[in-house]
Image (cartoon, rainbow, N blue to C red):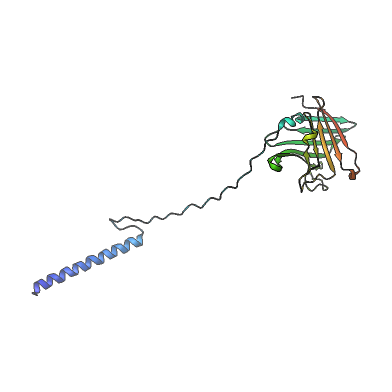
Length: 220
């Protein structure tokens, strides 16, 4: 091969090697800087998938209390005799519940408070059950130590009426307790009169408590 041709060939090979090295250097710089080389398109997408949301537990359909059976109780009722003041208040029914309050004072000094509720709850074979629950508190809102849990009574529809509601310990579900209570009967024989009869179990040795209250909220 003539010297001139050989020189030309060597120059071409050297130039090609230089161009290849320059390309490698540019590729390395692009990788180090995190930017794609000119004329190229990045096909890698970096994203963090959103965490899976836990499924919400299925909630049982709430029951509605039949307010027509208890609306005669709604209002504020009271009685005062020989220094003893008794007051019971029932809010209107809402949804599946009614809330009540009882206060007993002697000579102007509170001796006992009571919180009450009437609730509709799932019963056997899908039929709703209605329960009366109550808790007693001292004048300092300290729960009675003799009642570690709420006392529970069950609505007795067969022995109740349009203006009368009987709650009894008979037929309570397992685990529910009424303590010494056997029954509580509410009745309103007259529009402005509200009677309460609390009966106890025979082994308690206690006589029934009877309260004859009058409407104290000016009527409805």
